[in-house]
Image (cartoon, rainbow, N blue to C red; front, side):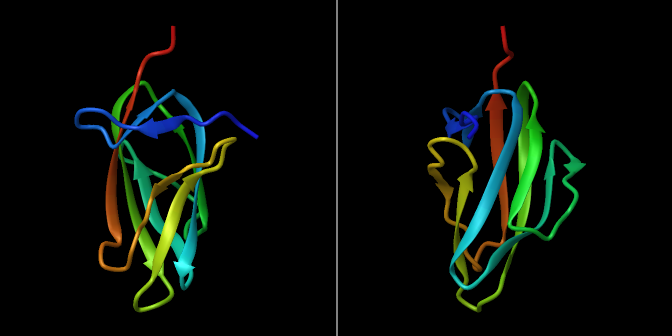
Length: 109
């Protein structure tokens, strides 16, 4: 499996990151949860709705905007990166289907 790219953020960033391809997945803990729509730095991520998204993190600061779709009135889920550690990144819920994740990635040497 791949090395994780996202880590808890500092300052105004939800996540600090390493540039490169990243795959995020969402799994329902109450009902089904899917990515309904998503964009990174204004570029639409295709193939949605789906339970996972893949996009390329670019150097600099950029927003990942996500709208989640929930299959239950009280739907909840867990967002994770598909990588070695695969730590929980967020807990989306039906009360807040839109999320903006600010990602800050340093230039690679």
